[in-house]
Length: 343
Image 1 (tube, rainbow, N blue to C red):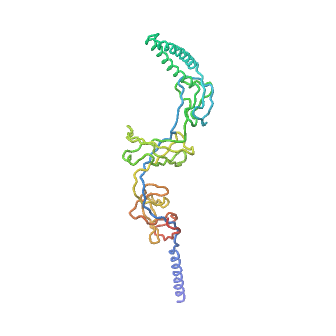
Image 2 (spheres, rainbow, N blue to C red; image 1 turned 60 degrees about the vertical axis):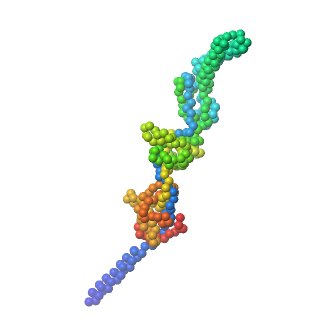
């Protein structure tokens, strides 16, 4: 009898202890979070495309005649001003043609001036006068062309900027019409992208654009729409849009690849901080705060307006509170305590 009583007493004590242990597990502390308000603001849909960045000003310098490199005065990457000499060439034919054209010009000029005076005194016929005048005119045109070729043997920069594609050394022979070097002005860069016609009416010159440059690790740059071509490309059926980027830091270089994000239609939408949205099983959610608890609400994300993002859900309205910090470890239905003033 005493043994049975002992067993019952021990069982009762064990059950009481287990009950207390279960009650301790149920009593969870409230989790501290930072809360932010759901706001209604103007948002824009976005059109994403890509392209290659180029300088707004870029000049390929060519040699109109064949020439031999005499002196190279600059190197790739050098900053030069307009009019600075970059490369000097020699070319016997261009030099000979220039000398001959110069002598011929002087001769025909002397004849024209001489016979012009005679014509004014009516001592020669109009036909003779016109022959000397035309000879001088033709000699001047020939001299101008030959002088241009001769002057280009001393190849000067036609632009203030940086030298590139200069791969010459003394003694190199360059064929006629070859590009001998390039000069780029990197202060303003450009990119032209194709834009769909159904959104064309939403664009304006000066509208903001975001570029994410792959060659710089996705770094973002601000750009503006410079011009909108009203004529669609024959192949793509899209409209060329030129974007201008102020390259103050000189990080952007000719030929860099970039993604381009262009805001389009404006409308009203609900926004929350980007960090308020989390993903579970490929779906997007926020924790809405109701009655001191975190309620998991599925949302569809829309436009990004950094540092915020548009969310679409019938369960959200302006003024609702969502958890924007403290999401890690939080579960649906957890009691929370707000550790901030509402953002």
